[in-house]
Image (cartoon, rainbow, N blue to C red):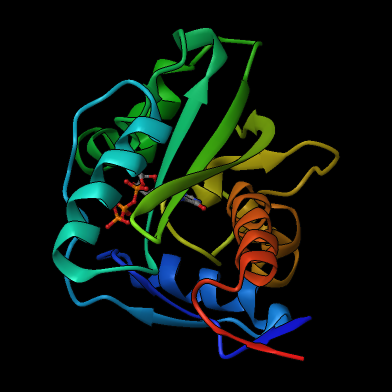
Length: 196
Ligand code: ITT
């Protein structure tokens, strides 16, 4: 049995994120719209819990097929900082501040962790995508957003911002999490209609 017309509504104030999600889900025929309501900011050390709780709150107000995504950046030599506080760190110390914290550090290992929560039939399902890599010595490239100019994914020498959206959207933390979501949505067909 096939499924068509799958549509999700994403709660984010980040237009770059929304564009990436639409691009990642395009091959699956899944339509992406902005919910028009902000993600509720929940405090937790785990992005999966943040996404789950925010989805529970938003779904109780806006119904099924609402999606919330939360992403953290974990830098190994900083004990996982900024982790789920990546947005706060970006807004306050910025890329320069993060690079300063890593000055003289040979261990530049880092990972993005992306949690995507969707509610269907009153239950919340969470999907995780991770991308390992390292933090560059200086910002490089102009594509993307946020930490893209300093994050080099495993197996590459260029940053996400140098690689550009086509490559990033194939290998990123977000691509992995949303691909898992796409498979779930098409199999369960909760946000679309079944065709025989
Ligand atoms: P919403 O919460 O409204 O979705 P946001 O930009 O605050 O938007 P996050 O809390 O998930 O999203 O992101 C935390 C920080 O990590 C924030 O500064 C983002 O710019 C950055 N970030 C998220 N995904 C990223 C990516 O794919 N590449 C680079 N930086 C990213």
